[in-house]
Image 1 (cartoon, one colour):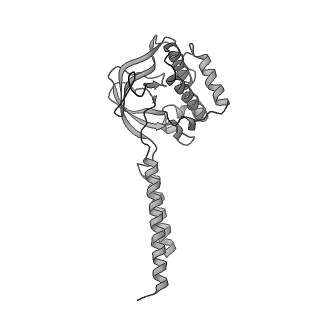
Image 2 (image 1 turned 180 degrees about the horizontal axis):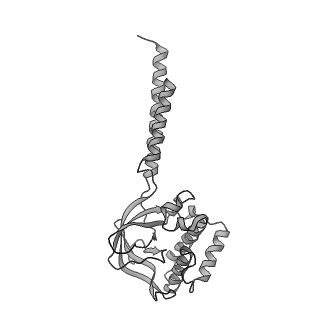
Length: 241
């Protein structure tokens, strides 16, 4: 019976981990766009659109020119945002993505299927390049390359062919998402406007404590169970008073 007591404590902890709403590596944050963009792309069928680094606010952190974080980067060819728009997004580090969660914790991972890890790693590579250049022409081309990858080739590649090829070569040479833990992906979850906002990348970090808290709870409960077992064994060894 003493062993069963410890077993049930661990079983309860595992059940908690499986069904707890905090057992997630995403964090929901308020997000907004202030109308700023650092580049213009005219490659797509919509005509000239904003590209490069966007200005706004993520979880209370201003991003864009003059701020510690240079902006946020749109990886989404299909959706649009307007100046002053506010929405809610789930944030996750690119380094936390894997084959088991990329389909549910990103906007395009499910549609990409088995190619999702490669595609998002290539986007992360390009996002990193975007943050390292202030040249608007390069920023526009990098945006076009990112949109080409996430749209499955549906967007016009424009002047982005070289960047698409460079990202593919980087994947072949061994880049992986774990290298980009400093980059966070913000996927829209709710909005008040008529259309879905865009998925964004930025260097604004958000806590990803859900899974950690659940595992700490499980470990603590298991340790508590072990202490109870030890205490019972000691009491049994002493015998009745």
